[in-house]
Length: 302
Image (cartoon, helix red, strand yellow):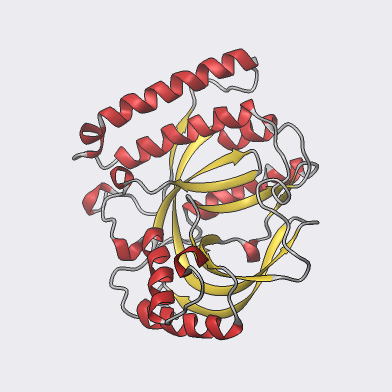
């Protein structure tokens, strides 16, 4: 085992003691309540769990994944565009900062944990096309943030400012620990809300998605982008995630949720590049596509 107790390009998997798909709704509700109580007990003992034990972040992520899995079994799925997010006006583009995932992780081997998880999902997602639309590989992304009501001139200024700050990053690659789950609007790998107790060993601001979000805010300020209520023009998601499928038709996602969440996998997701892009929304697919303003390689291979 390498120094620090980590094995390269491996995901942590824990088989659930039982599956939930055959439980009744009252049984699922009881299981959900039990898991929520267990999570609170875990939080009360965080110092013990996350002290010298480097598996602490994996334990917390696995517990959160199981809770999300049971919650997904309790609720029906609904279309992502039109319910979770409002449809955009036709032909509108919005300026976003995206982190583009690296399926090889830290380039130590062929494939990697993320590639393995995506391969696993590719065996599952096509069987549920009546409910969801898989995200094509070229459009997979992690939304870092957006600048509302941006102009082409502001996009150019922001790209220049971010470019200067990207060069100052001292600790790439950017990495996050994510878990696969089904929500009421799709399938994704989710990092969860920022939590200082759940940061993996070796975590640094410069090598985190949180740091990338701060880079967007800093870039907007450095570029002297102004306008009414600038702070409210810059937005980042509540939790960073990598969507692998969007729901397009309302229905029960119980079978899908059970298959995706049957094993609680903690996947290290590395960022290949950071991209400032003009994003278009296609509610019919549903899908998001984009055209690039600027892209910065974070692997050291560019």
